[in-house]
Length: 113
Length: 115
Image (cartoon, rainbow over all chains, first blue to last red; front, side, top):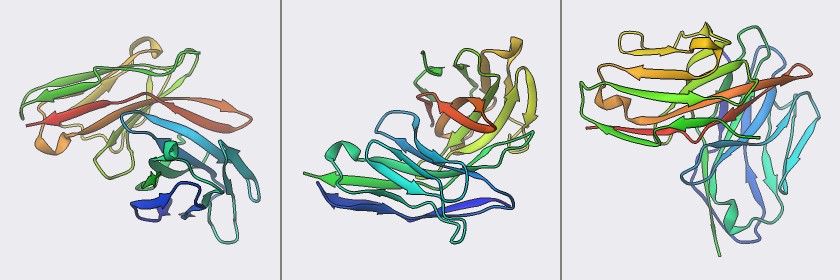
């Protein structure tokens, strides 16, 4: 079945460092790919998405490119801030009459000043 | 635009007791989901509604969990009786499809602790 694998955390970086959180997927069709973020005490928020190969999703300085050849959707940010501290979830969805999102296990990111 | 509303935000009960959670989706969103998120894991789908009909409840432990969505708007999720392993955050989401791509919007969740 479909699945998402993302790098284990926690990831701890200094402010202004470069961030990469790896995500790979397994799917039978052509899924849409998502990154969700969960700030402390809050619900999941959609961060960015990409719906087809080579699409780049971007938001709040974060980017991820849908790579079909490597089945990956790595999350990157050039300069992280303390406010980026959260748990990040990679996810996929295959559109069908009974579509559902499959989430990775999440990566906790902590940014120190 | 108002987001997905959930209540209560926190609940502490003893095992074998019953508990119910409520969700009000974003207006106009036909699809509603309930997820269970155990600490340190990603959300796991429990049940999906399309309007007031169930689309997928294959991962819902039906011996103790039940859910309904009367009138195709609000939804309730019930656990009866609760077990220790039900301690988790219960997330409700509603979704919108644009150009064939579905995007889910999540509520803040209800954090359940079973003692």
